[in-house]
Length: 49
Length: 533
Image (cartoon, rainbow over all chains, first blue to last red; front, side):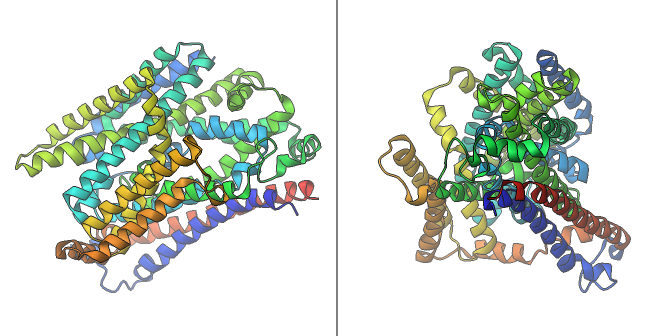
């Protein structure tokens, strides 16, 4: 197996996967509770009115 | 064709800048687009800023002579961009910063902010001069127009489009220019691969000439593994602190726009750069004698495709130069007007209304432009030194300071000042000893920037441990740490809007992951076995 050739494609692919998973993890940690209808102490715009 | 493309692009840029000028009503509009940036605009400005002349000219030539892996393996700027935007940019945006030094002012006070801003401006000016000089040499040879005229005309366009509408014009113009960059990466580069014999040419064709075309060190350069590792680390650490990456998070309308923009930008830059570099390598099979080699992409545009497509390709190269130059000019101008002059006036008890702030920012852009043009035209010897250090200054001085600010509560003002000065100073000293004076070599051929970063972190930890952080600084750390990075977004949107944005962002992330895995996976399946033993 030519590792240099493999890494040439694996490297950018892994970066995109890391980026995507990072974004998905932010969505899960910071927003999912709110989206599901909970939200704890978070106050959305509508709650201010 | 090239001359026409040159003038059309410059006129388009200036006209667009004047058209968007009407949207600039306040200094916030000028500096961060009133924080109204949408996904397409932020994706455009981030991608176009990331892809500079270095990608289309310098590295493209290295790929042509050495084969695809030499830079595809060590292109640490991809992960650097992701970290710079999500880790650094998202925090700066959530803390309400208008410019990057804003955060340092709040976290560590005036002295740290002034030193950091001076380093920022010197680094950006050095980098800006290099970009402008590179553009002058390249466009002069392509168009036949003299170097001095190209520099002056190009600088007038850059100054105009940065000064007229600030971030607004940079975001909108860069988004328009991105179209030509996409043509270059996704239409021209595949045509170049086809001209070189398609996948068979890329694999068997190149391997028959020299199997080292598919080696990590390259066919011509035979770079050692230490160089590959060093380059990866250098780019991965340089980009997170680069103002033209993290600074592009500041105009985002909300957190969701920020997340979608980095997903699209990462997809375009990973798949686009891979395709571009495969195309440049394939051109060796079409003509192995292109000289200078770094004009391989320009040569392909002029000689291998339909003139209209070739013109769009050259426009893509110009767009890459213009967009990177603009974000660099803008960063230096903002540093001069907002982070030094405005703050100085305010510290003396003076006040500036919004109109005066915008005028001041425009004057700063012109001052920056004139300085860069004088350097680019006179080419003093010192500028070659400054330009060599410019990029590394962000990695050695800014990155450790930002990380200390975000993560190290007990970091003292003296500690971060020592970190910035020792990091930048040790890098410059090592660079001169190793690369200029050739006094010794570093282990594994690692780049001096890696040692500069280590020295900077050690200096921050050591000096901070000798003193005590100010209560007000630790209070800022605690307050800032307590600010949820999503809080600003949540408070400005209704629950229904959040749900909609959440689903769109989630879908975007998955689409980008799937497209990258499928496209790059198919390329790997098609190419790797054919170039293996």
